[in-house]
Length: 159
Image 1 (tube, rainbow, N blue to C red):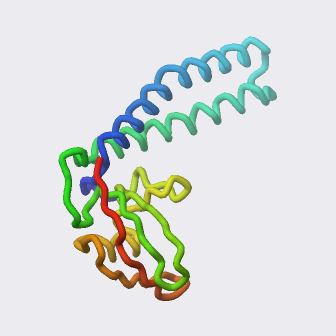
Image 2: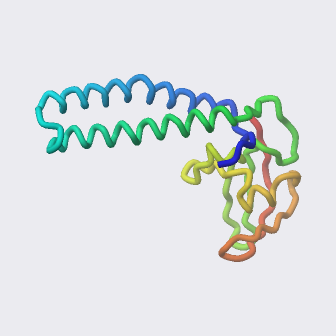
């Protein structure tokens, strides 16, 4: 794993920080209680509930460690201070697909908070790399595994 800083929006940082707090408090407490209940059932060598709870505890601690590491490397970019028509990290960009006239809107975020289902794409993705530095009304050619796609930037928003 790299020690380099990773850009993240303030909202993304706050979301991950809240998740870390929930895992360290609510989830740790719940699993500790499950372990105690399983221990009270007697012989730990053949206790499936105990084994399951200990496995969940290990997975939880690994998730906590990863979140702590990610947050320690996070560099918060305040997208609320950005404006203009040029595409940069944090921009929400509306694209017209020149090949089929469909439209899509994506927000360029850091690797940690990328989520295709929510149209948040990583700044390192092929489409984001093609968009960065471009401006409103620019045509953009994106090389994807499925072939070349052609887009026009129809809107750039920040916030």
